[in-house]
Length: 506
View 1: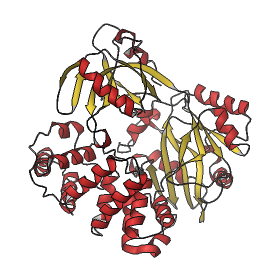
View 2: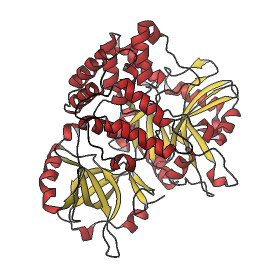
View 3: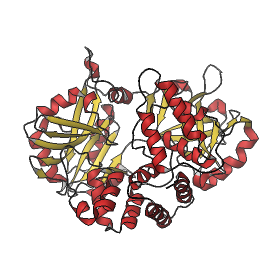
View 4: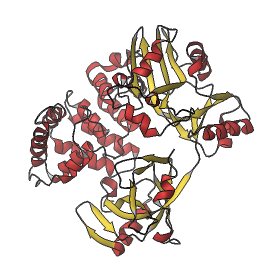
């Protein structure tokens, strides 16, 4: 299959909001692919590179200015092979080898193929081919029952593996998929609650309220002395976290799968900044003599214990298993609270430096890989008034519209605004049209991707928090930023300052 066929399907998927049409387009694409190409195509259109990290930075890709090829010649197999060579280019001379491979790839790609490859390799292939839609497409292309395909995906945690099972093995292969100690399971996700009272009322009275820690999601597996630790994205980080491995090996069991969070704590037992925890995931596992770098595990679910799968059992049973094997590692929680008691627990979580709480029904099973009403998260809302510095042209359904905003905070010393992040979240069709019409009146210059503006427009941004970051000049970055509204009633001189944002650092 040629890469141009993938580009064609990608464009069609991004151009529609209809789930049915997305599924039809993806199903047709998979139907055209060979059985060996399907896993790769599924991974790409889900925004995943099977090879993992390629060793190529965002700036290197943006700086590529190779003239596009006239005719599409690249194939799925050829590109996959080149990405493998790119990911394995290490050691002396690797920078030059990577550059040569990038030149070979992008020099052979048409303009639309270059765009897809650049977005795939920078993690910005946002086109609506989400897991649920892709699962539907796999079922359609393979002719297998949707429920069977969906469960296989939940238990393997991999769309590409699920596609291979459906196409190569059929119903029997999908039916044989089960919970397996050592293989990561797609994590159950939570739905944001309108309010704490609404969550307690809708899920009560048989519920539990957990602290929502300001840490990193982990899933740990143990069989005997063999321990594996996975991230939320199912990346294996076992070698980087020997402190977590040591704790799990001490548990009184033979086999177990636990779901929880990990974080580093300061001397007072308060959570250290989120990025301090995340930095450990990329380390070699050498803690040195710094006790502040030690990761502490806290768990809120147990999916398997000593040969018994619990994933389909109610949360009540899973928590009983968790308490029996790791009582000292339970996330702080209260069971069957009133709204007032839940509020006290929420206040205690914030006072301890955490994000908020999770409200969960004790009757529900573990809906792996799905976001359901059985788990609801409650966090305080933070907003900032920031200056729009630039906007990038959108792609897919947003082609022709200015979309991704560059955001700046006011310099209290009177200098130019300081960039603190980007976002395209929360933009309605009306706002996209308004931005595209309005920004030209404030433009200073542009390049092929971005229109740069005079610092005049103020936008209200909702965010989950602030963290330290070397990516932006201000040394901070916004977590999960999204547009609330523009503030024509405010000038750039009234925007929030970089000092005010830094003061929000944990």
